[in-house]
Image (tube, rainbow, N blue to C red):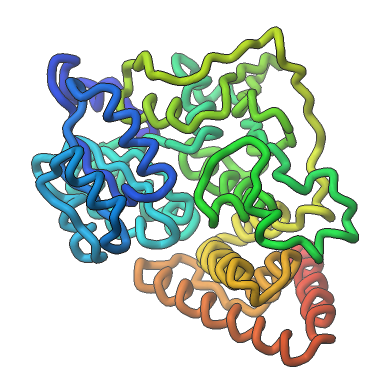
Length: 403
């Protein structure tokens, strides 16, 4: 079974006359609020059964009053219970970090389709998640604009004829900033993405291009292709959301304005397309440009590819260490370029579980977070330690490549 819906999966979906019943995990975040915006445009098509957020807030209260869910969840156990309800047709996983991991597995085990916007779930446990999806014959719909674009390009195509997937990246706010100035970047500058409106964590990941590295790992799992067939390229305009190259050299792409409501609507209404209230693309007014990614400027791309290739719990450590590094950066405790430096040093010190279980993955996650914070503390206490960590990690990476 592929990760996108099969004909048999489609036969189990509700007809166009039925309301699709949704559980939205992470409803107060960027993807969650935009999902509810789409739902609000089509009240005759969707019913919100449950909302989940990390804590009670005025926004959550406002959403509850507007959509009248049966359940409002604010703790991890309640998220899992919500994902397994019999009266839910689709679970939208829009939580940040590892919070979406267990609800996703629970929903798939229950046989409920998942619309997935949470990157870390597939990064940390892509093998487990997709194994569960295949076992339950239950689809995983991608919400990320890049993976949605690939999903759309693959409609009607023979997957065996795919040569490679090409993910596009805006390059973030610093693609043209002199390299020597990157170390002094502030969080205020890093949070100003030129094209997309997103949450703080993914916005910082877009600035370091870690998000693109994570998306490469996601694409590997979602579309069951080796890393050698998944590439990325900078496309500053964010109009071409991704491309698929076929064996005959043909390339299909999906274009549109940078509006996350479009891939959200495609995922929650699949196989239909909704006439959502979104700006339309004036293709004649756009110049489309592309450029290769400079791994020296954006080392997180290399780190992600290496972690994916090494497998085991390395991807888990990558995601967990990055999440902690971004948190420390947003708290003004480390610098911008400390993010890839500390992530690499954490990966360098990790001893992987080769065929990880759920317990192994969670243990590696905890270890990576603690180790990165410890390394950050050591680096702050010993200013010269940063360069030592970089040299050590680079030497380890070189040895791993040789082997």
